[in-house]
Length: 189
Image (cartoon, rainbow, N blue to C red; front, side, top):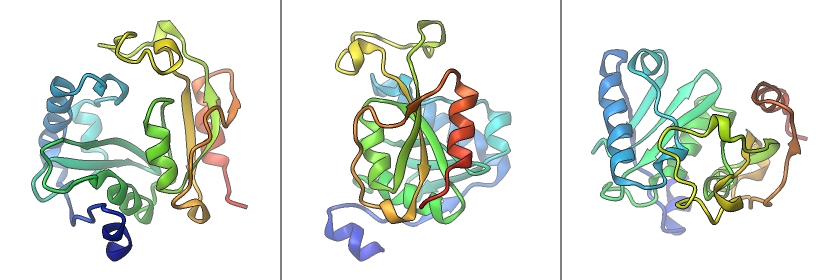
């Protein structure tokens, strides 16, 4: 796997699992990202008590990480000054090996990243201004449905690693819970 990733110009850094008591370190890296990245509002930052219940994996420099909340992959991050360029792809693949089989994201640049790691869109939810994340800037995200991107629910399919995202793919659902249910029920064909 390392050789394949590196041949594509991707890092394959070793990941280290944090102890539950170190969840504050993970959260602080997520918060630091939100202060530096205008697009960071698209990634949810959990509270320490929530992170304490998750598996938290970070690179040796602490500048990139991925969290597992049961079978859901959440809080993927990589700072620009991370020692491991484009580490997110390798981290996603590592997370799937540890049981991460679903995730959701806004229909921005993230579905492309996740499709490369083998995730397929199984459902989508239309944007609702009432649920806009704190700090959301419609102008910053204007290129994505005029700043109002859908939420895309994706599930892992090992036969689709190195896949491509098809914009608009996934059946529309009425609410967030329906999207989660579709991702949980997905079985690769």
